[in-house]
Structures are given as structure tokens and as C-alpha cells.
Length: 169
Image (cartoon, rainbow, N blue to C red; front, top):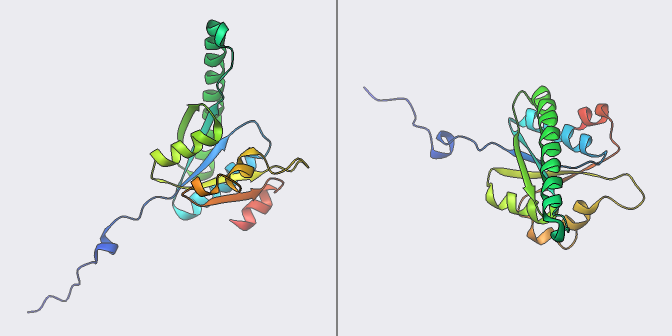
């Protein structure tokens, strides 16, 4: 009797890597657009969302105690914001996001995290709607920082409504 079952190829046996959409958290109004887009794409592709907030370092070296207190307050506020956004991500995707808090230069910390976490596969940013331009991160990553970015960058127009986002994802 011959065996008629076929063995799976290594490509069929290996689990498909999870696509992780990284959203940089800041206080811009475009954050909600980038977050919703990333959540909808993650939900439809079986992926996940990661949220990164970067605390800029202060320049009050001669007032170290004051700077430490300010840094602690900023970190607590950032963690509260991440928890609030994590609930939104969970409602939209059914999964909890990875949360990252870093200190330093925002563009450098985004690149550093991407380098350290190979599961992060797409950076999602929403463009500012102000006449000044799309925003500092988009300006950097579409300009001189483009060669340093080793994952795809998705730029979402910052003025899109929820209905428009639903329609394009």
C-alpha cells in the first residue's frame, strides 16, 4: 500500500511571521489617524500594533533634582497615555499592543527600536495637515533618514475621517 499523503514543504510548515505596525505616540492630532489605520491593517492582516513614546531629554543639567522630577512626571503621563491608547487598540484589533517608552531623540529612538525588534515590520505615520509641512518624523524619514530606515514606511494623510480610513483598509 502506498502513502498518498504529501508532506508539507518547509514554507508550509513554518508559521507565518506576525506583521507588527509601529505607531509613534505624540500629542499631535494626526496620532489618532495613524493609530486607527495601523489597527485596521493589523486586524485585517492578522498582525499586531506596537506603540512607542519617546521622552525628549531635558537640558537642565544644573538642576538635576528638578529635571529628575520632571522626567518622572513625563514618564507617568506617557505611561497613562499608552494605557489609554492600548485600550483603543484592543477594542479595534482584539489584541493588546506592545508598549515602549524611550528617552532621547525621537528619530534616533524609532530607528533603535526597529533595529532591536525584528518583528516590527512597518512604521505608520500620519502627515500633519498644517501648512508648515507633514511633521518632523515624516520629513526626516522621507529625506536624509530614508537610507537608515530598513522597513516600509506608511504615510497616512492626517485629515482622513474614520469612514475614509475604514474604506481604504
